[in-house]
Length: 488
Image 1: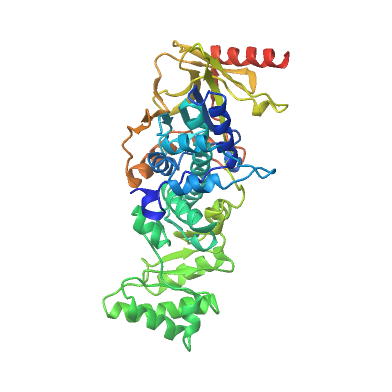
Image 2: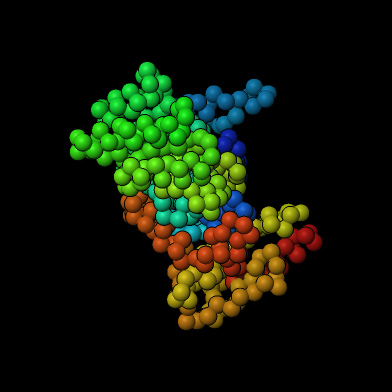
């Protein structure tokens, strides 16, 4: 599907920060708008204090880029913007050029569903600097949020140890975009289904849901409510049992479940939404089993996250379906991925590449210059290292990679390790050359990727660090540029 056409009017090129447009006009006025540039999108710090992230959001970015352009109404709006002194913010000649512009950039990116780590490029944009600048905001918007949520979902599913995890977060999500994007990213991260019906229609995600407390409260008694629901939805019977008294609710569910059996239907499950979930689930399982409902599932909700699920598992909770909402779709313990987009190379008037670097008092904010690619190495047992290298410099194996934050941390890349490039071609000269896999294929890829990293990287407390480093010559180039810039 095309996200823009199916949900909004396309294109959405004004979905950007104003300074992208003011810089674009500045490039145009200085006669350098067409100067070839390279920008890289990456994130700096571990997500949720964990050991990895799961790439997501690229397909939204592809749809947006395929529709990139400015409509007459967009240009009319931009022409109405004023400077503080009342003069027009944008020149008419610039707006005319903006209206005539066609996307010309090359874009390389990490496919959705791949495991990624701090400081390595997730997207690389190469092309006319005014265009590469204009696409920054949306790329960050799409990649940052969905990568964050896919990662959160992967962590939650890891805690659930194979039990189905249902995404129930629409009502707590940040608007329409947040709800739809979170449902999609949660599915990539491992969730089995969503309560979000529009996400089900648009993305083909399985949808799940039965009834709320209000259904039970509508009737004179809980038994009557359960009987009415079973009569209206006999093939989808999961009773929410904690409206008044959970243990009594389980008894009532069993009572109605026996009547269902007589009619040839099954009591699919019960759901716990409050109280001591470990104790109540254990008691519910005992009661269900004693009544012969061995196949009836016990689902739980109530502000779950990976830590609470892990704890409940350790307590022996008899829950085998997990409904996770707020803490998943809002990523409540980390509000943003923190991805950034930095200029790393620019061609001179003579056609030579000039590498660019941004300095900072914080060492972690000094970017890596160059035309960057990431090579992932596999020793036959799993992923062992990601090496960032410059395509112009290249490298030979065996190679040495160096931690960008600590030059004493080095790793030798063996010549007999297999490898692949993380960044793959997405656009060439503004034309999409990438065949997007289906959402189910992306989800399977994520599961395969997570199986390839060491279990210690996936633990929640003090995860082991996966080796990511700069190829030796790139590390030295960066160090030389830092010293030179600091002495200016």
